[in-house]
Length: 426
Ligand SMILES: Cc1cc2nc3c(=O)[nH]c(=O)nc-3n(C[C@H](O)[C@H](O)[C@H](O)COP(=O)(O)OP(=O)(O)OC[C@H]3O[C@@H](n4cnc5c(N)ncnc54)[C@H](O)[C@@H]3O)c2cc1C
Image (cartoon, rainbow, N blue to C red; front, side, top):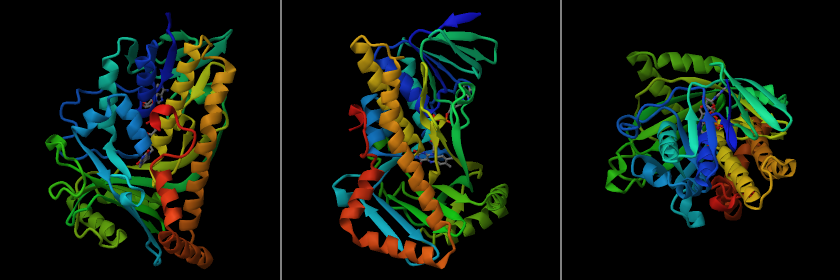
């Protein structure tokens, strides 16, 4: 049976799709959110015990968006890890660059948040909104647009007619494919392995990344003591001995490292490799979780919009995790899209109007393209064994480290404060 969705259908209820549902739902829009996954369990124990494997480094701009939606205070009362410094170095040479929040007069450069906790925070707020309906175990399998109406078909046989549809269904977006939107794809040749560790020395609220010959290895600071004392700031003696690992490397290496995490002896060996990779900066390392890995494919949809359709988040662009920007860019997409749509509706315009959709694409595409290009350049520079490029990156890192105005500019970029942001992110 075909049902009517009301104002908009969002396909994909990950971090980005759920945030868009909240933005539009809060403005009174009637939203149907469809996700292929099952309804998540109650979030009662999230943010307690060992850290989750998947985390995201969120920028100040994303934090402002989540604060405006009432999600941030709930997260902060559970478990977040703001970091005040970043250290990035070339493991093959002498180049190193360090950033400090104090350099630009802010308290932190960003915050590490566990993905499942953030999603639970978003869904909790969605449950409060009567105008938003979440459909779980609803996998999109069919799509067509005719006479100003889209029909969405799901794997349970249900179908929905909707005036507006958003693809938030991730890097391998089914909706993007069904709508015939071409995508530029570049396999980076790297795979990201993630795990969690305990470290002998405290991380001190510093995010560290070493560029190894096979790819970057990041130790992201975590704060595993529940922040019930209201003081989740890094540097807290009791809480700064855990890190989330993102190790981008060759597929063969990733398979070997992942298999080490399968038993105690292997985990010991993996820990020694992590210690060596990070140059022994955090003392003895203990691996406390499994080590799954994910292929890293950079994708950019050739168009973000089509008739009555917009792509957001990884469905529009996915990039190397080395700068921790994927979720952040997706959040900036949905903040801009919601801003354009809500404004349009207020002045009586049709949100499906091609000019309004084009404005969303114009405001986001340039920033996202610049970030994709930067990640590609970084990977090329640091992935090269050519002596000239090695020299250039060591001079580059050392030189930039001494140039405060350039460093300040880079910090502003890391804070997510550049580009044409939506008002609630500024
Ligand atoms: C190792 C690693 C580390 C990372 N670290 C960071 C970081 O520190 N900071 C950062 O900003 N980003 C980071 N990223 C990137 C980030 O994880 C992604 O950019 C982000 O998850 C994209 O969110 P999304 O909601 O667009 O897509 P997804 O998270 O992929 O969500 C898509 C949703 O769509 C649903 N779906 C899929 N197909 C269908 C269908 N056919 N029908 C219905 N529903 C469907 C899925 O169930 C899912 O819920 C990292 C990525 C990796 C791999």
